[in-house]
Length: 284
Image 1 (cartoon, rainbow, N blue to C red):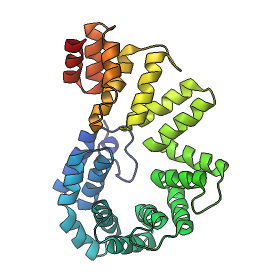
Image 2: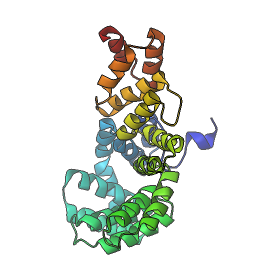
Image 3: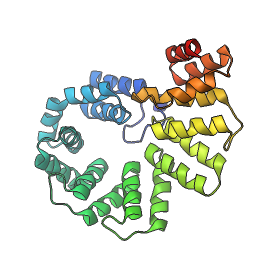
């Protein structure tokens, strides 16, 4: 692994990077005294369902507030995010995001768009929210592109426009945003392109998107867009356990009854749930 791979920017969505690696990057940034980078790596882990990532980000809050007070716009975005998460001092969070957006912080534009879209701590202005989403998306922010796509689909703050929805959905998916990859997988499946659909589901699944994990598992189980592969099916039926979701357990147990011990154990290893795979073997 090259140096560039070891220390990528937190500004680029870390598609498929394991949560433990995101946490390690945050820890390394703390050690280096780079609290803004640390906070953003922890936020990436938090978005993947990591309670540890959430708690570590919260642990930096007082130090990030000090940096925000000194004018660090990226710290302002992080502090605002922590406040919004807890539903506290919402008007202050909105003012921090206003300052960050004025300072051309892409994440600040996106998050200000979010609070404006719903009127969180500020008067709702979905039209301006879409302007901010577009500016952030054009600067390469995948979540802003996805939010913009959703608003074009719903007609929120703008007229409904399926062409614009498709454009920004594709942009977000190309940037690896799991929610966008999953929706694009659904859209492609409706057009009968099952193999392409599975690839989008897998991209989302590898970034901890539970519905995409289950969709991929069913594709492998039923041979939709791929040859039947029970190892991969059980792998993805077990993977939602990463997010505390057991919706795939019954399906995994049913499949395990027709698999060899070695196949079930391989699926457990691939999913990171070897212990649960052993339970499947004992219960079949």
